[in-house]
Image (cartoon, rainbow, N blue to C red; front, side):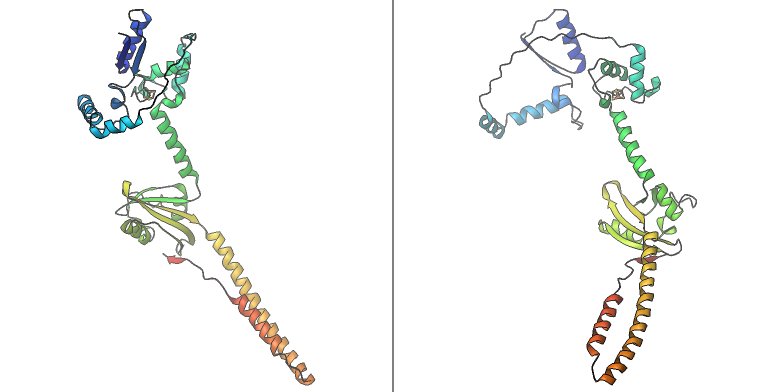
Length: 317
Ligand code: SF4
């Protein structure tokens, strides 16, 4: 046959073996690594068997609507191509090179080689050989990439200064990071597996789960001498609520210290102004003039300076 179509890694290997032995001389080979072609590919995660999938595909492509769409899409395309044979020199990697590549993807012992086939090769070793030959990439190993992504996110969660607490829908603590432990002293109090209410007020977590809406606010934990800015949001898909806490105690303490200094300065300024105004009024009275305009301006100035922002946080135990 001039055109041969095969699918599945084994069939592909057989056809290439026959080709290299000159047993066949086709003009075109369609070699599909997945059994049955794309309908047997990794993205097809349903449980249907291959014959059922084929039957459905046949039914779909023979439907009149599909045919009409196909007719509309038909355009003249020149598929002529010229190919020049290029030399391919196969190198056989040494055992040491293969082991090195295996180690780079976290496979140090034969037990680490799970041979899951996720990369398209039937074994970890085969894939490592392909990497040595320049035919595959390290990143094609799915478990390796998954672990890499997980360890990155773990490193971020572990090292951030923001406290993170994860509870389930019954407000049982599932996880917390070191920053949350520092803020609420959770590890020492064996918090994992306990109700969050036992350690802090969990009203916002409860509300977030009930309404399925995120909420943000600032809270004062009096007993812990702690002020946090926090965002609580539900993750319905995983049945959990996540709280992210930023410790703003130092910032708030600075702000309130500044506020009391300002208040003190205002009180002193008011006293001085009152005394000075009294003297000025006495002098003006003697000269037959009025100081009412000056007084009004100074009082207005004091009023403006006295306008203060509230604390802006809730108080918690
Ligand atoms: S995806 Fe990774 S673990 Fe799975 S067979 Fe390929 S190299 Fe081995």
